[in-house]
Amino acid sequence: MSQRLLYDIFQAYFDARSNKRTTDNALKFEMDFESRLLGLYDDIVGGTYRIARSICFISFHPVKREIFAGDFRDRVVHHLIFNYLSPIFERIFINDVYSCRIGKGTSYGIRRLDHHIRSCSENYSRDCYVLKLDISGYFMSIDRRILYRKITETLAPYRETAPFDFALVDGLIRQVVFNDPVKNCCIKGNRSDWSGLPKSKSLFFAEPELGLPIGNLTSQLFGNLHLDGLDHFVTGTLGCRHYGRYVDDFFIVHTDREYLKSLVPRIRDFLASDAGLELHPKKISLQHVNRGVPFLGAYLKPYRTYVGNRTKNASYRRIAEWNERIFRSPTGNFDDPGIARKFLSSVNSYLGIMGQFHTYRLRRKLLRIHADPDFWKRFRIVGDFGKVAKRGKIRKRGKIPKR
Figure 1: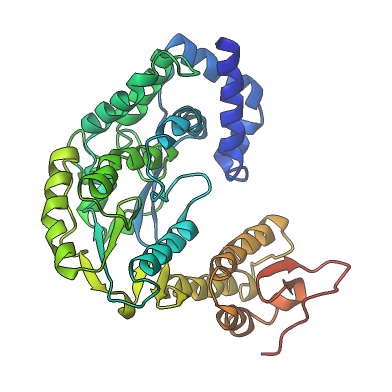
Figure 2: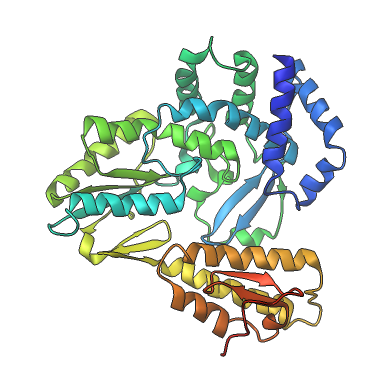
């Protein structure tokens, strides 16, 4: 088991660095990663592993939220726990839970909502309604004691058959769940960044034993498990066939508007008794499908799906930021490969999201109108405004578009 654990730690490290390799924390760890991972192994086996201080900052896009980023060494442990527990949790999760799951995500969730609407309405041939609900301050309201009980109850049947040291992993889970990142955290940015952020969305104002940090992989995984009871209550006890959830944002589709209204108090009572959570009173939406349904950055209308205004406006804003930072700044330097890579990653992420919908004109507008003229000296368009790439020696595709 010891050799297997060491292998699993190395695998967790490679998973953790896949999208964080350019961060200072990851680069510092990578300089001597073998000895650091061996040290982590010794700490875990010896029971001396302790969670380091987190970095706290405010993320402004797509919405303002408080993020606690764990030390890279701790993120390796998060991936280790995820790799161990996710296969077990997947056995009990319903299909229509979309966040933090392999092969799913926002795009899958949007397609599933479209499927549920078409199925329930018989392809828009009869009246159909969508009830959308949200949980008030979800991550900040999670009771760690209830969560830990749910985790242990879920894992209990696998105590003897799990392919890992159950007691050792349980100790890691306990540390992660009951860790208070507010203590001894390093605040990045200005205190004014928190101005306007509701207290219900900050761990600094959370009650004792409440709250999980947004930013940790384990928070996403445990957040799914915490609402697994809700998923089975709605689909099993209430018998709702057309249901789906992304984190704490969930929907129910049905032909009877009054029936959907009657579900709200039952769901409210279940959440309070099962997880100590409350529905957000201002985020209860019930409307006819013909009016359009916003969900996960998309806007679903009969027979067509649009990209949401938040995503569209964010893409315009991001292009404007790059224009100011690079093209119009005397200190900007696009010859720096790191800056160019970040720019391409930023722009192509938005093009990738938009490419999932019928947005050719929108993508063309984004690059033709909003991009600075100097942009085209260094980059070219690949395909139908679906991707941007650096200009190289071979320029077969992607002419400078007319403005």
